[in-house]
Length: 376
Image 1 (cartoon, helix red, strand yellow):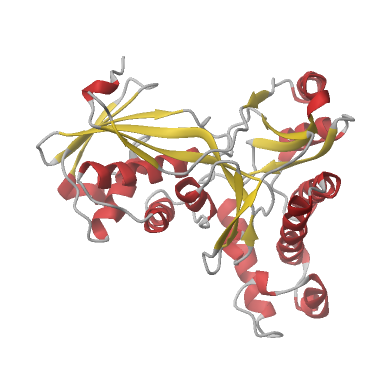
Image 2: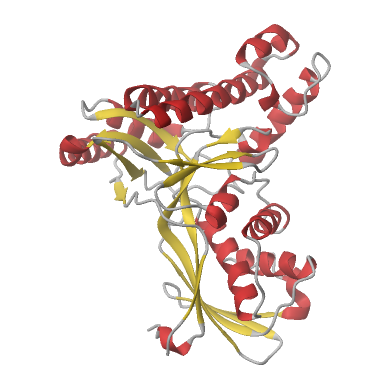
């Protein structure tokens, strides 16, 4: 049983829901995610050794990492995210001191709500905090992304780690993934709420087609560069894309078209949120899901059934998969007065279609990194 007062600091980082802008972060696009109050919390204390002792509130495992050998733990089942984060923080020139860390994660694993980013970001922030070092959340995010890409083998974009570190309660973040410029956009939905629904089909991005999709977009970019001076797919407007997309074919054409059109949906969705136009926002969520299903092919039976169940209810203005896909969650825009009936309807229709129960998660929007000294 965890006793907070046995530790010196409590450091957390957020899970996230991406409202719109899927599979465009690694293509230089803008995304519109929000940090959640679902988070990974690290309880940490210095131990005067050259080791990091890891434990978890929900696992019996205990793992010890030697600070001088942080590059050697890539095959660990659970601790590789922490080891990779510590390794790249150290490699960037930051001091790591021996410490005991207990990890407590309320982000459902495999849900598409970025438990891995929350773990990476909170681990680095905790290592800095216990060493008495102030940290830059953006640097923490960038090194966490490096850990996921180069240590655990998922060639991810920057969105998940960035929002986990830099999120703000009550807001989405319009993040330009090419420049890292950000703008906070208040999430004011009038008589509607966001509902996050889990498919209960966990995803594993290492084993999924995630890296394959990245390779396909890179193929598309290389071909399109022969026709236009662009640095990334997000540089193209839908009209500009149509003029030169004849150099592409098959699945590569589909992947590129999704990216370009999804970037435009992010622009329109941001404008709709600022105007309080929930009807237009809902329609854009539906269009995003259709594109992810038909052009990018990252939804699958479960997410399609979940989105279809949501979209068929009269209180739902729109619903889409959120996250990388291949399992995970949907996010839906639902009228408050129909919320209970909506959840009952989705639960019934989804289980009928798949045989799985659906889960409904708290969609409260929270802050990114929070570091606190524990009062004794």
